[in-house]
Length: 372
Image 1 (cartoon, rainbow, N blue to C red):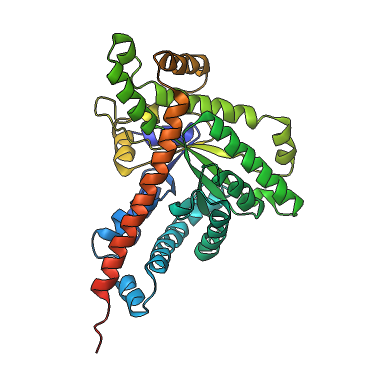
Image 2 (image 1 turned 135 degrees about the vertical axis):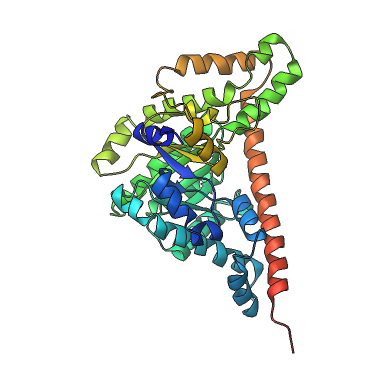
């Protein structure tokens, strides 16, 4: 192992693990990653829980108890996932305390089937915060059109939020606006703004996957030269937007009230194309006050051969704009791509949730006490 993860942390990038399972908790692996690999947070999603519950027997005792009580599948899932998040939050509590609440965070997502329903998303976020009952939990709300007002409502109640599935710069600006509006509501209610935290999860690799596919379809040398450029350009321009919003007069008033900046979080940072270096979306997205949530393979690759050379976002904005413009000039619509990716992202999480329901239901039936 190199000291690349240490250098990354020193550059102001918080390293979060994009994975969680009961085995990771009970085996001491999560504690080990915190102690040895500079991991200071955890993110989860329906896909992660579906994989965790369907593999091994780590959940058998709890599933057996839930089956004996004849709970619904939905209730079983919430009991299982919130238990994991609660335990992980307890393991990360020393990090939370040491960083004044900035890190040591564990994220749990609202039911993705509610992504287009503002009221239901808000209600579910409140329920999850109550169920997990840990100050270092983050409730994940998708950045859909319906999710934006839910973010404002939930932040306004003093609940910390991880905004997920952000692909477009326009939507990201709406997310930041929703966060500031939520803080303003919380301030009006007399809440302590210093206890409210948020990250905005800007998805990276999927942008290259979709745009590269279209560039391959065009097939010219000019098109091929742009492969692997769009995702980094998009993320870097997101950081430019972040710098702009959090140096505004509107932010200054909240800053005086001890509010916390909403940090950009680089999500989907595992490389999908084997032609690219496996630490591409870590090495090239280094800037202060950011988070990079990595699958374990990317974490290990960064620790082994990551190339952390300081801030790789500062000074790149003009180049990033030129690269997005060059892609559009070839007939690839940025707006169409990012909307497609958002739609697909919600659909994928919905599909994972359905798989989670099915596999949990099968486990409940397998472990149900025999009648008689």
